[in-house]
Image (cartoon, rainbow, N blue to C red):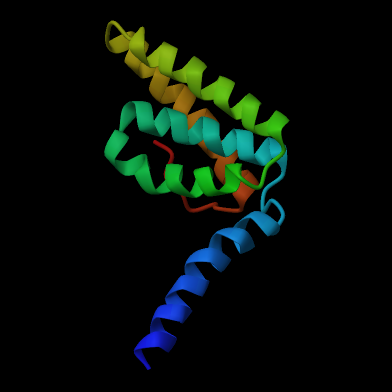
Length: 118
């Protein structure tokens, strides 16, 4: 019985990543980029709250075409540069407004109408 349990765990450890990669993308490339843009703004403004969303997007990135992943990566770099340049309250307010705009588009694309983007 112990051997069967170990064999099952080993098979699951190998099969799950293969199944994840074998399945196609769940989001369109544009929806993926929008979701990444939203997560990047949320991560810049509230880092602790965005960890689960980033983990889901990292899994989705493995399913996306390289071009969509590159566009998403460029968005993250741009938003991180913008966050580092925040020097005053006005800049922070602009970033919060940009987050609200990015997240409303991302959540509409994902069908999540109940998300509070503010």
